[in-house]
Image (cartoon, rainbow over all chains, first blue to last red; front, top):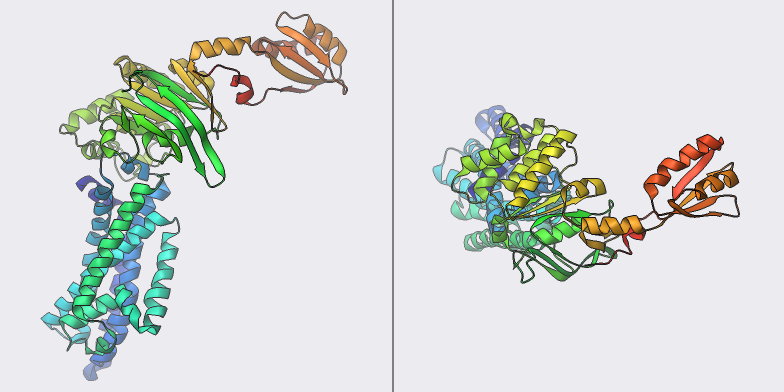
Amino acid sequence: MKEVFLLSIRQLTGPVRLGLILLLSALPVGLAAILAVTAGGEGVGRDDFVNAMLSGLLVAGVLPIVVMTLGTAAFGNELEDGTLGNLALMPLARWQIVMPKLLATLTISAPIIIVSGVVTALIGVGFEVRAALSVAVALLLGVAAYSAIFTWTGLMTGRALAVALLYVILWEGVIGSLIEGVGYLSVRGYTLAIMHGLDSSAFEAVGDRVIALPAAVVGALLVTAVFYGLAVWRLTRMDVP
Amino acid sequence: MSASGAVIEVDNVSKWYGDVVAVNGISVEVFPGITGLLGPNGAGKTTLLHLITGLAACSEGSVTVLGEPSRNNPALYRRVGVMTEKEGVYGFLTGRQFLESTAKMHGLSSVAPAVDRALEIVGMADAQSRRLGGYSRGMRQRMRLAAALVHDPKVLVLDEPLSGTDPRQRLEFHAAMIRFAEQGRTVLVSSHILEEVELLADRIVLMVSGKLAAAGDIRAIREKLDEQAYHVRIVTDAPRPLAAALVNLDEVDSVNLGPDSDLVVLSRNVGVLQEAIPRLARELGARLFRVEPQDESLESIFGYVVER
């Protein structure tokens, strides 16, 4: 598994992809800093900041886009380059191929997203350890769930990035904000719920539209496990080109 | 290995994608030594190799390699080396890193000696420190072959391994495969070039349009081919003199003059005919507008060969 992991890390950290991800992740930090400086002594309201920067930009935008860029490429690159056969012909159980791919996506995206989220929160919400930890834990579980979903998507279709983008815009974005119950089946909903559940005072702004903390944690873990399982099943059943 | 001694057993295997039948009811056994899988482009060779190596699932029938099913049986790959037709490589790795990575994934305990041995077999020791992305096509093919050999497999399955290689590399490849087979191992190598397979293989499996056209000893099939008569159609501005000259050749069985003054020549030796037609036309001052075989498909040539 270690070799597949190392190979995947190198595959996913091409300079262009890494540069784009870092740039995207720096966006909320930069905007938060600009807001903090330009707002002067009056500051930006905490609720407005949480709604716009953390819920809107970071959790709804940067988090899924960064993870989909990596997750869909974990197998997508192999399929596109014709190297998946190399892996499939190794004496490795299919889960031993999917797991390191998933971990590679997680290993690259989690630190970037978490640093971006924590720094953004520290600037906007204030230097509060609990708030920072809440953001870190919520984003970690969000990254894990999205990694599994997008790793599976990369195995399912040659247009994984487009499909993933549609899913994020339609399901996580439009439908998620229109239909209340979707929070139980939305990674964005889980992430915000965990953030709020761990520090309800700092993230009060999203309190009226999130599910309970235990349900959110179980939901995120369940999505991770189910899509990991689906990816293993897909790799086992598919004809490797 | 089966009771018959076959290392690879393909039993009534079919593979279809929607309405397209890529492999149609093939049964064949592959024994130790070198077997060539031959057929024109699009014959279904790659699909059959994917079924044999377990990369694809059979729609019907079964495949065993070394007595075990090849599909969903990763442990089998410890004893089987495969070089697919896909030429993709991890361009960011050096040749040596690629082989080391492959050897580790195979769970080898002594990686360095295995990598050195594989590099020596394919003659790529000098280029091992260069990135695969900078290799020529032939070099990539050789390094991919080294990866298929690095774990010292008992069975080697190679899909068009010689594409992109130069004549010297082909000779080296032939020598390496012959050495490999002399150790009692099994090589199944695909190609669409008869002459290439003929140089290398003891036996051939011939596929045409997804079906098995012939299988067996390559010399026996060659002999049968030599006995087969071929039809060649000739369009010329001097059909009668050319027909008279051709019919005098020992290798020509008959010459028929068609309604459009085209000639249909029946011969048991196409090689001689290929040389004789332009020579006789030149001697007679005849212009040749068209010379074409009537038995165009490999199937029509090989179809009569007894299946074994």
